[in-house]
Amino acid sequence: MEKNLYDMWKNYYSKYSNLLDDQVTKEFPTQAISQILEMNLQFKKMLNETTERYYEFANLPSKNDLAHVSSQIVNIDAKVDDLEEFMQESKDNQRDAVELQREITNLKKDMKSFDTKLNQILTLLNSPKVTNTKGSV
Image 1 (cartoon, one colour):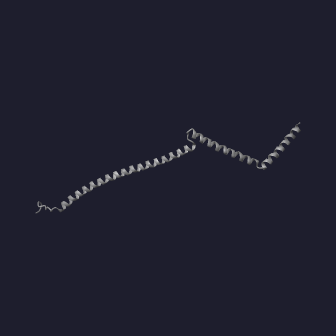
Image 2 (image 1 turned 180 degrees about the horizontal axis):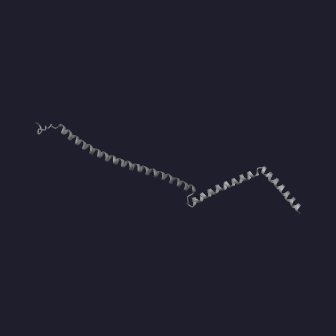
Image 3 (image 1 turned 90 degrees about the vertical axis):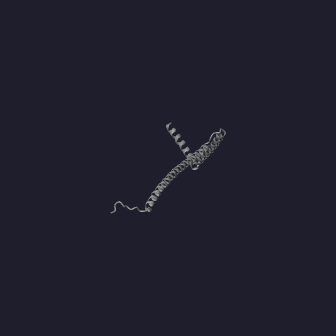
């Protein structure tokens, strides 16, 4: 019986290995895999469309809606950052303008003081010379 069982197995193995070899050489696996992938792709497409319609019907945001809102938030955040930078520059410019105005005011005071002192010096220079008569011999 052992011999018989071995012969049966050998016969079975040779038949199916030849059948498998024939099918592999006929490009059977690639065609089957291609068909399976095509079916999966169509199923996924149908599932995505059904999900989109459900979300629209249920008034829920879809993945695309959330991505769109997210990109808008990023854009708004960038604009807010630009505005904050602009406002800071404006404040700095205002501070600079106030400081410049203060310096101009101080400069005007200094010039007025300088002008007054210069006028005093000129007045003293233009006044008649007074001779010292006390110490002359």
